[in-house]
Length: 114
Image (cartoon, rainbow, N blue to C red; front, side):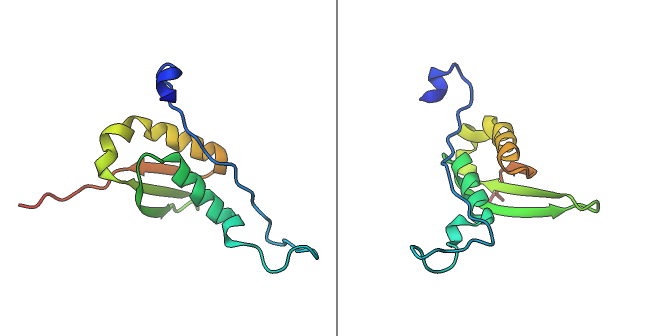
């Protein structure tokens, strides 16, 4: 609906999340350790889920290059390929901007039964 309103531009909605650092200290008001939902990794995964919302993530792979760089390959649900295929570059650019991580979105090859 918003894409139609903005003249065909891709629209992505990402929730605002709060991260607490590793050395998070509680005060008298709060007890216990840092919640798992406030860690860097969980927030980055939640951002990834928000980005690809109309479809679902069915798999993740991390490629490590010889030079030490990492590339995450995200496999999306092939059922939504027609609707989402044009937005893959947008998803990658937004995720890179928000998390500074390289990511490549693709659809897994479904073997046909013969």
